Length: 320
Ligand code: NAD
Ligand code: UDP
Figure (cartoon, rainbow, N blue to C red):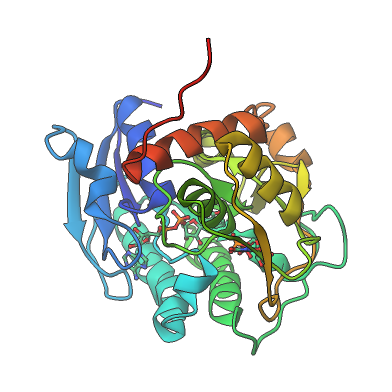
């Protein structure tokens, strides 16, 4: 695909800013929209003078006029701590947000990629999760503002496709981590690394036997870019199929940071999914053999190094 005009809603967030970098490297003109509710202009600070990059402060719960060939919708808080802080705004960010972006796509003839989530599956009863599984989601629980908002956003994408012919792509993203996660954002990878580097207690919620499958950000962005170019309307799982318990993650972080932090247990949040692992067969088959290439060990090393710099901490001396 030649150079295009692309809009990245949520472009100043963790994933959105990496996506902006990647799209600029591919020669596209990139217009980021963000309301900075969880993202930061610092995430795209290095792009400030880039001739093909523009950033507009905009909340997607309001209408917008765009002139783009492609729209990537990454505008929604993703950490449970963040998205439960203002559940009304979270729900509207997903539902009204994608509605306005789909309207914009319809007007200007753009293709839209929706960043959906493994939360579509809720606390799943089947493992690993395949796209055809309909999920086990609480409509009323504290996570519902995010889960149900994202489910409705998928519905709207398919409705716009069927009713108006808008070309849509839906990525069901599983837990992704890497540089530019916010130190205080409450997600498990950033929490554990920051706690370990500061020598604070590592907070394990529950027994730590719940599982997640952690995907490094570069692998995820590669999948997103391939999906946008693919001929595939229905949802596609993007994530790392290697499953770890939360306790295993804590031990890996302690080992890689050399920290002496203690593991302490805190209550398990309500509706916390017990297991989560993607079946990525569809992505492998339809996205040119896409699969994650970065191991948890290597991805954590990169992320720890970034958090050290972000927190202004020195790397420990390594004996020769
Ligand atoms: P993030 O919080 O770092 O990024 C979200 C960005 O969207 C932020 O810059 C925020 O300021 C912006 N935003 C939020 N609401 C907005 C609104 N109403 N209008 C405009 N901007 C708004 O989170 P992230 O991890 O980068 O997640 C990005 C997207 O990917 C989200 O849609 C999330 O649901 C999805 N996702 C992420 C993960 C993950 O593990 N990181 C997993 C599944 C899905
Ligand atoms: N978690 C934890 N300690 C923390 C933060 C999270 O044990 O300090 C657990 C949390 O209960 C969940 C898992 O880690 O089981 C992943 O949490 P995160 O908020 O990163 O993402 P999500 O629950 O949305 O997958």
